[in-house]
Image (tube, rainbow, N blue to C red; front, side):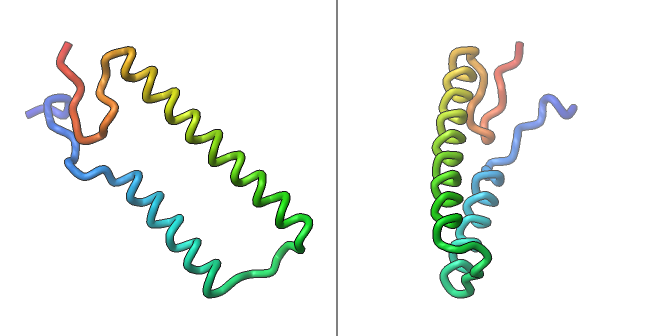
Length: 83
């Protein structure tokens, strides 16, 4: 079996790795907070972080719409149809 005929992994690793990193960072932030920035700068950085997350979600939705429109596989557990 060649590489392009082989099915992808059944478990979607990238979202799990990202969610695990976010969970670990949030847990460490609760139990071991670091006071690097004071209140005015920390609030600004928090707002920028929230805006970036919203922007990445919008970018992800646009990518899914484009892939769907092109007829390709969106989920990493599915292989693309043979041409």
